[in-house]
Amino acid sequence: MSSDNLFSKEEEIALNLFRLVEENKGKKIFVSYSKLAGEMRNINEDDFSEAVDKLFDLGVLKAKWELDNNDKWVRSLSVAGEYTEMLKKMYEHSSNHQYVTCSH
Image 1 (cartoon, helix red, strand yellow):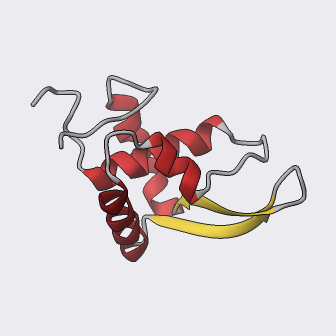
Image 2 (cartoon, one colour):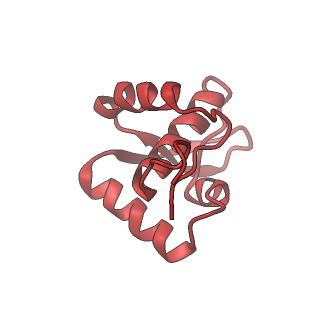
Image 3 (spheres, helix red, strand yellow):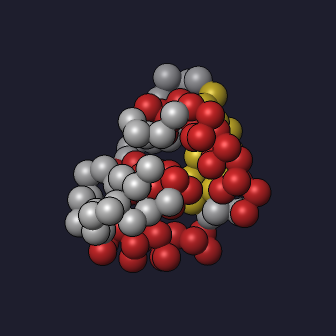
């Protein structure tokens, strides 16, 4: 296992959600479930769904309905506030800031 692949599926998903939210801050572009799933190229759909459910159960992820630029309602995903700082530090210490991968 290389040092780039130390993250679990759940950590990878949370870190990539953190990245997407940060990249789109202030743009009124929201990260939906399908957008996040599309970013997770190396996790199959069932594993992704299970990991996202686990992150919701643990309180790491949260979701709310928001109105986008096209006046359409979007279920926007984000990281719960108490986990933001931890994920920010993990993200800053990862060697690949474009796409965080895990070892499965």
